[in-house]
Amino acid sequence: MQIFFPVMGYLVGAIPFGLVVSKMVGVDVRTQGSRNIGATNVNRVLGKKLGFITLICDCLKGLLPMYFAAVLLPESETKEMVVALTGVMAVLGHMFPVYLRFRGGKGVATGMGVFLYLSPLAIAISLVVFVATVALSGFVSAGSLLASGLIPLWLYFLGASKTTIAAAASVALLIWLKHHENINRLIHGKEQSWKKKKSE
View 1 (cartoon, helix red, strand yellow):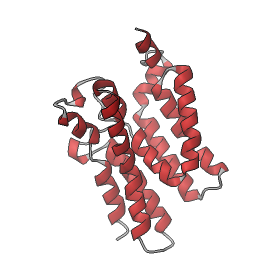
View 2 (cartoon, rainbow, N blue to C red; view 1 turned 30 degrees about the vertical axis):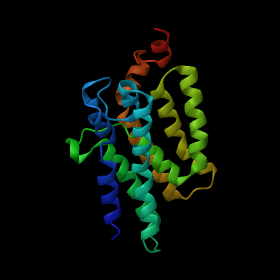
View 3 (spheres, rainbow, N blue to C red; view 1 turned 180 degrees about the vertical axis):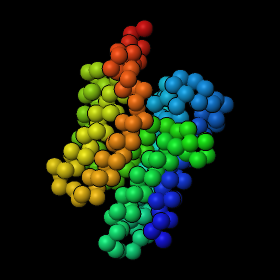
View 4 (spheres, rainbow, N blue to C red; view 1 turned 90 degrees about the horizontal axis):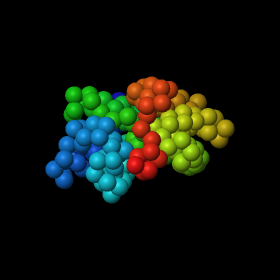
């Protein structure tokens, strides 16, 4: 029973909502923009409405599997760990979806769903960090990296359990690893800025 929920988390996380949404309007989001199936690229290619729908769906992929695991699993010493692993597996599913030959998104929205389950207050603090970073730097990727990377720190100060902090740190690490190209472009000053795009 315990292995069922992490597997379910992966399979739900692997559902490519960004691709589903884009296909509904006759577009393959994998061929345009950054060619990513995530909400940011859907927003860039198809507009804010469809981008927002994708964001919500991808977020729920991280939140709901953990919620159902927490509700349906009987109380045990390992329950917290299984619920946390379910969230991590949902993020892995989004990043490496079996339905798309393991070519997925970068995990920010799905990770946000996991963080939201772990601590709404921590995600609220990091949301402020995200908005401030993007507003000041112009880089969405920088905001995503900083906001996700600080979640484990907020959880520590909020007195979260070691299991919760470990799950958040794992998700943050996965997000950073998936953003390696963005990090390289940021270092070399080649990352696309929404400020520059807006001024053009």
